[in-house]
Image: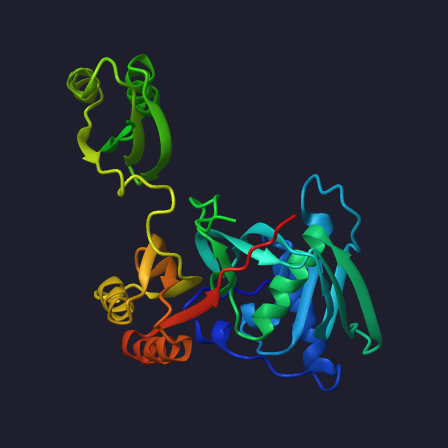
Length: 166
Length: 182
């Protein structure tokens, strides 16, 4: 159980696909613990295992860490092999990432998602998430596929008005 | 007949720059149409397309702007625009794409990427670069909004970018601009 270093881009693990978890064994339990400890010790709201150098499909999210969040959410979520089953709606959010310092960008995300996976005991669970929590879950699942928010920038901060005339 | 000018100005950033310039424009009956202004590190840069009124005339506007320019320590250029240049829909509409390029900072990233885009006739309509990360390990992030002309084939542009990815040791993502009408 440890607070680990959060890897920074251009560490190659951040641009790689993470491996499926086949059994919640002693090693995976230790990684879950480390990811949780590292998240608690950081200003962030969610973290993916590759961000601490463990290339496994494992994410944690705790929307209650966001100050003043009034939307409903599920608190601490631990998900193994998460899959986004459903995406609805679209919104632009301003995102940053613990692995990309000093940079935020406008990212287009689904407003509502259904994410399915295994919990820390290996049982199938699913979550219907909205708004901020949905954003965080999509961001973390992206990490498992080597995708950073930089790959999903929808518009430049200076360009609020579309160039096309509708 | 309406006359338009392009004003570009830049100088050390401080509160009061936009108010100083726009006071002159307001007092001389000008209308600010489209503009783009941004701060880069300690400098503030502005581009404004302005419609002139008939009075008091271009010379007077230039005289008043020169005074403000000196006070604010700005470099300023005023360029009359032709009717064609000032049109709202100036520039042929192509397909809009977002291009992200990022990696360890090294010389040549901007030049090589933009040279490749130009070779396909791709036009950059907005662009932003930032150096982030630590001094020891700086990361370069470049985000562009581009217009693909009808003749540019997306798979070709993608494969050109892919070759460049390896050469420059950067990550590159090209995706169409999505719009959501709410």
